[in-house]
Length: 291
Image 1 (tube, helix red, strand yellow):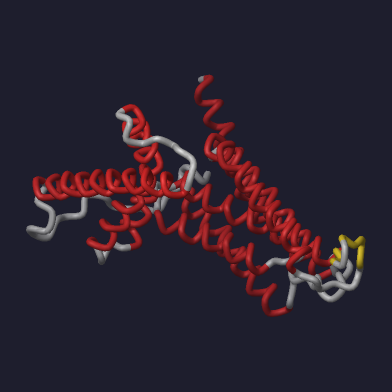
Image 2 (cartoon, rainbow, N blue to C red):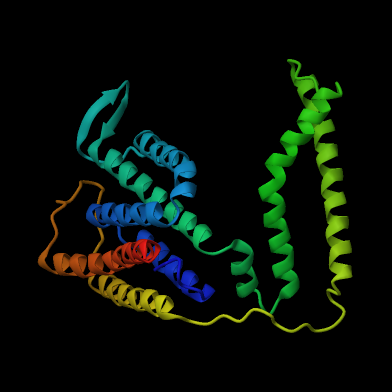
């Protein structure tokens, strides 16, 4: 279902809605459910990209888990001591669920990058500012190739004997200055090629027609409907105070109240709608292939 949506506005609203919910809902139950649903969506929609990035995301979450107990000394339930430092249940729990929320946010951006091309998204956001859109698109495309370009230049300089990885700060600085000069020159050369290509295509000479029109289909309406229901649930949670959780100075019980259970089940229904929609599309595609 996510892959069949066409309008960029759908993906903007979808990612923004999940981003807001990750920031608002702090209860452990909500945090775990959000992470699991996005992980399942990532495996269904962007399994290849997720496999490359999930280890790095988990390292970020682990870093938050390990640093928070040492940086935050609040909490009244002491578990054990390392020297004079007391590690509390509250600080460890806050670090764990904070790290899980960070991983969830990274999963949202991974899904967004898999569902819609960044240049297409930027062009839609800056339709009235074409030059800004062009600059951002070129900058992002250049950053994506920067690491590859640095490695290629480093290999060429090493083969020519101009880059010798000697020990010492002075030698390291000298070699990297040489490498930086070549990278800058290559970047300027690429900009000249881009400018020549734009001039050949008549960019900026007169107002050009729009060759790409966006339209909503059934998948867009399905996603927007679920997002609208999630927005209603989010407003309800903010007004009444659902989905919140107090870690300090002492952790409150994790169990949900009656209102929170109703809200959580309705919210889980909307999350399940995205998963079931994607699973249904995969099954339909498999049936069509067999036929």
